[in-house]
Amino acid sequence: MSSHTGSNADVPGENLPGERPNGEVAARGENPFADPGLPPHEPRIQDIDERAAKRSERTVALLFTTSMLATIGFIASYVIFPVDQLVTIWPLGRISALNFSLGMTLGIALFCIGAGAVHWARTLMSDHELADERHPVEASPETKQKVLEDFAQGAKESQLGRRKLIRNTMFGALAMVPLSGVVLLRDLGPLPEDKLRHTAWKKGKLLVNQNTGEPLRPEDITVGSLTFVQPEGLEEGSHDFQKEIAKAAVMLVRLEPKDIKDKRELDWSHEGIVAFSRICTHVGCPVTLYEQQTHHVLCPCHQSTFDLADGARVIFGPAGHPLPQLRISVNKDGFLEAQGDFAEPVGPSFWERG
Image (cartoon, rainbow, N blue to C red; front, side, top):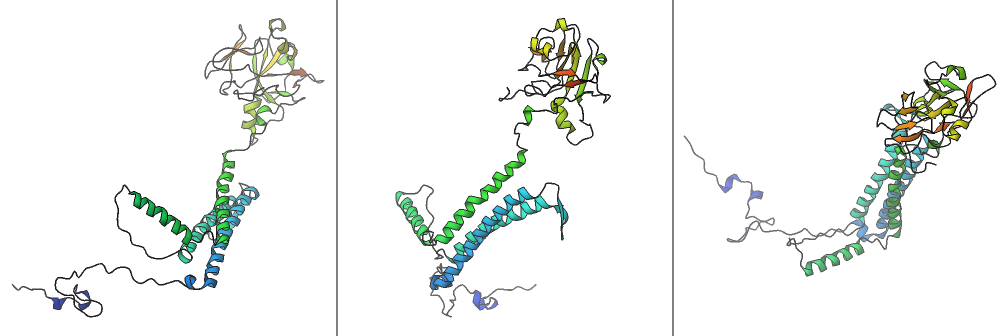
């Protein structure tokens, strides 16, 4: 068995801890690992050449301005491109023009702000190396004062007050980028406008049996029967059928005219045939259960009960308003038709209902 004892001869000369760069050997007892300190500061070209500093300033301003233009492009893209438009972009293939344009413009806007800030810091702000000793978590008054002084010095060295072009374009870019988020709020849905107040019913619209698709005559409705109808021209296969039927669904009930207690209900009926919205005024469930003897209709969701002989007023349950009534009559051909839209919004109550 052999043994090997290491020596300094086995270690490369440049790794000997006691040897200094100039070839001298540290004296015995001197710390060979002493902190060498920071290297000498080397000024940048922008520190000694104002023309180079101006070029950097223009570069930063260009990046911030590009960010502003990209934000404008983001908003314009949202308005210009329809949501279903597809474009072919190599190598991505066929993609949504709206998604691509929104992603590109928002990405450019954010990248240019970041790139401008980095370029500003690296070329124009002070780059003197500073060493600071660690301090306790609770700062002393002297430390707080030093921090404030350092902040003031940093603000001065950032040249924010001097480089007005950078300052103004940066503020412009930072002010405009949030507009992208504001525009995205548009995706919460279409503006309601007054759509909640109007349905597909209009004067002259025939009452069509929802099951057969045929227009109805008064003799088709017998006393005590319940018939579900929809406006003429509303086709089940159309793209907006569900949206429209959710507001325009109507139930027809024929009562004895002498049993109708509400005068307006009687005036808006035809020979005892009354038409009321089928949509419950609580949370919008379809009202489907009818009791012939009492003339009550019941919503199966939360048991709101309406009296169809008394203006469809609420007699039980959480619904807050009567069912809206549709005014009907008979046209020259003998078919039941609407005399206009509902007088008030249908469905769940809302704060502007009137």
